[in-house]
Amino acid sequence: MPVPEDCRDGEGKRGRRVPQPDFLDAADEALEAFGVLRAAREEVANAQLPAFFRGAARLEAQAVEFHAYENQVINGLLQTGDYARAIFTMQRPMLSEETIEQRVTARLARQELITRQPPPIMSFVTEEAVLRRPCGGTSVMRAQLEHLLHLGQTRNVDLQVMPTRVDEHAGAGGPFALLEPKGRQMMAYAEVQDISRLLTDRKAVRTPEQRYGIIRAEALTPRESLAFIEKPRGET
Image (cartoon, rainbow, N blue to C red; front, side):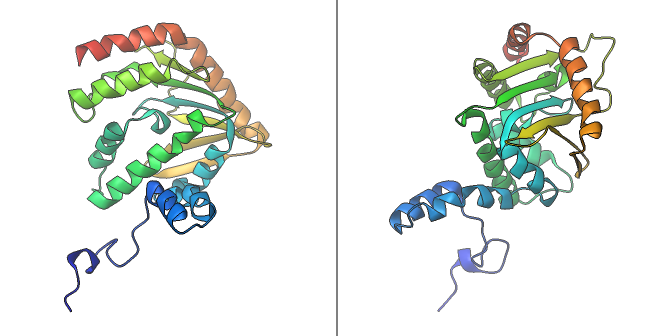
């Protein structure tokens, strides 16, 4: 009997493809697994993430506080699917289409943190230049900016823009995040060129905490930032 095309050699074609979260929900109900398969959603989503980020992702999912400064792209927790897909498509060396879709799915799954109950306290500071770079094209970027405006109305999320005109800037060292998992102290996470570092020592974390406080003070207020985001949205 000929082997169906979908089952021939190739990545994901020998029963090794990572199942989508919706598939797990449906399978749990169909098989009457009493939530066992549904409970695996987080680990399945993590399996689709780059290996260097999986540990940080597990801590992120437990966060009662999360804060991030970004100067290259919009933070993954705030991205639309199309914007995330554009970012992964631009990556070099190139990723396969299957890997791109897996990572988009995993990135969107991480965003459940925003609406989790009780909601975590979250803030994001993004460079103006990031909001003006039309990743994926004008329509993709317009939808992304509209998504930011929507998230900016969420009570537990503060969005701030760092204007390019600011002449003193504490974020010159690059992007980073602060996260406080439930029952643990604040941690710091930094990533560049697929190299990541997680800081857990209290003395080491104090420096990025202080730096982030200065960055927030230098940036526009959340209300000013939402008005600012309206401008590039109208220009796309």
